[in-house]
Length: 448
Image 1: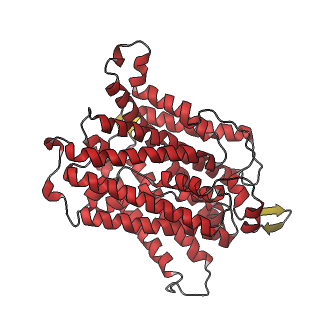
Image 2 (image 1 turned 45 degrees about the vertical axis):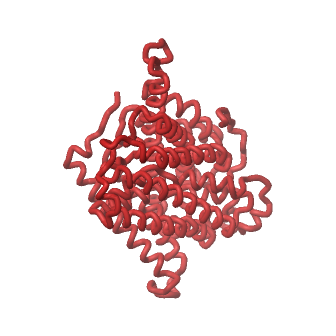
Image 3 (image 1 turned 60 degrees about the vertical axis):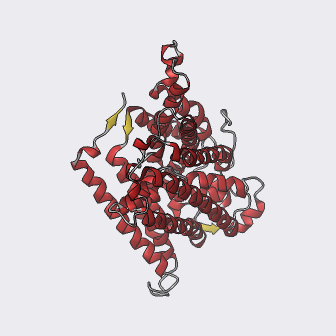
């Protein structure tokens, strides 16, 4: 894994490979995407982009979603939301081509004006920054525990005891690993780190699959709950699954990182990434839920004994996944600021360094002072994920198709249904999250 990187890469892959607008006085020239693709001399291939996208999608909270929705309904939701994710990811790139714009923000600006630009910027930043904070918290919950388990006497050794301390390890991993990776300008250069994170996710899936049947009986759930049809937490499950599958805020950057960025090549990346993610998530969800059923926790690794060696390896892999995935989210935060406030300015190394540093350290600070982001993370995460994945892409596509055909035409009806689905899920998720503020469930948990 690379630990040292520079800022000397002067090529901005997103701006170099999407349908751009070059302004010459008052005239606006639309540059054809395929012409730019032929001129492109560097970038990532299909495997690089698949690694980045699949790494953005994969999550470990799916067994809990199956518990909330019920076994059969949970599996159905996984398939449906995976298919919907595949379609809307490609829809974002199609919207970029139809509008002649180069970013998610510019597409929303083209379709809905300044209000659309502000809305998507806010949701993109909130979702990505919330993800960064969550990843930092997970690092603190996994890596120190694994180190303490591997070296029981570490606490008695001067200086080295710090490696078993939660706050120190969060700072160490983020500053020494995530920060250098975040300084890259081209997202395809993170594909090697994403590939390593994908390997870590495979270790998690295999560990849960192997160790699940061997857990002590007192840790297992009620076997009569294994094959339930539907439970009352279906909307919470939709929120969890949507949060896991959303990578729409990365999609245009991943598209731009392709050596030859075309819709056909990007469709292959999307299909492969979502299919791999679906197989991994389904395997993890089923293998864990049939063992723990009604006791399934949000982080499935917490269901296992603390001294389980293979699960501790999985915990380490999960932490590794987090500090290599964190830079992908920082890319989004930084691009949102650049596109919203500095879209007409050339690249500035000092500005790049300033925003990278300030965003990363802000997220790290939140991770250091709390174990639980509480109800605000649920609001920003659930609402932002739904808006970015389902509402905005479909609404833009509906708008770009024009008024020549009625809303119920077969070319528009899927977009209308997608928007309605997103609005319903977002509204109910918001209500459920706000309702938690009236109970102790919404209290913050500090780790000072």
